Length: 538
Image 1: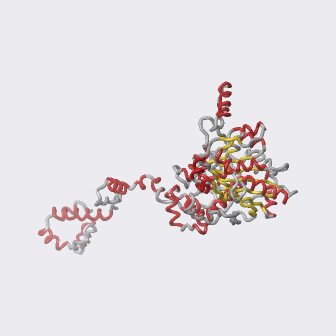
Image 2: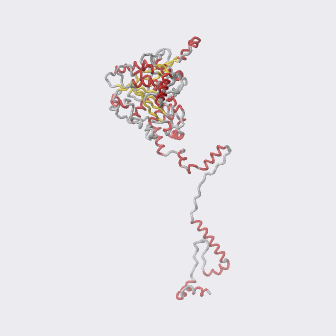
């Protein structure tokens, strides 16, 4: 039977060969089931007796299925972070565990930016934290120094901000910081005699201090209080060190700037009586002269009191400044001179009064300019006209978020009359302006910066941060133009900003800064405010 089946499929000439080799055939092991031992044709009958064809087929199919499962790759399943069961069943913990389970950083890359910083930004932050003060290049200003000093009201230099002007603005701001540090190192002042000389660590070694300046607060009490308690004079009048006069004494720096510069730096409010003077906000006439311009010029009562009042053992601020500037003008007679008055907060207000006084103190007064930081309004429009008439150039650096720059003054103020379109309304406003004790007006040219432009400060920074002098210098150093972001190559160190305004710095940078470096207050020269005196805005 088998020979008939073979002969039907194999050619006749090959049948004898197949039959001859059939006896030597051996069954090879199956690649599908290597466990089955090879068997020969002689044992086929015994195998068929023990295993049916159906069972063998089932076994072969099972082995084939196992072999295919080993060869096919296993599909990758997404790994999810198991939610941890919190013992605390509060809503906050449940929400936190749920957010961790969602792993939002895998869905939105922006979520990871809040936790991690790119290497480029990390290196930049490390550079700003690890280095000492680095300034913009000191280019030669001899050919354009009058322009940078305000001869053309800084036209074309503010927006975009000229790099040389940026450097000058920051440099004058650091003169004011030196005044703050010197005062806080020793705020007490002897009431028994004339004060001793005070050391001031200037940021620019090409300048030397020539005179210390004092301001006297004088808050008058009602007459019946003086009659009842005549010994309370120490509570109503007190003199404090408020700034200094310095002059450039380096030949190379004089050659670079194109003139010998006289700097007058004034700090801001730092004592209780100075705060009391700030709240005396009614406008008063500057002088009793019969000049028409002087009659229209009015300034805040508290500022004028600080400027004009003499102390028990020190002259008034007005007398000290005029005397020292006259002495320096005589000492350096024949040289090209300039006068630069700079101040912050209260010092910015007094700087305007100082510049106005100096502009008329001598026949040939050098060019006078004011660089003020966060200054309030000082007087009315008549005072602004007086400043302009005396050719005093004023550059006000203003933070858009600083409330101090918007006071004092209510109802009628700067620009109200110009904004009115009707002539009759403008006449009425002009009359009200002359008789209104709160009709204040700003003076000079404005350089406006904004806390929200800084990538390091919180957009909702508090009032103290927006008025802080170090924050001002940080914003000026990064300012490029009103329509441009914070410049990426800003050079000012962030150490002082982190020390003084850490709650207002974004948490991302404070955490990274803490990991990168330990902040050293003493190395940076920052001296904490003494307990016996109100802390300064800076």
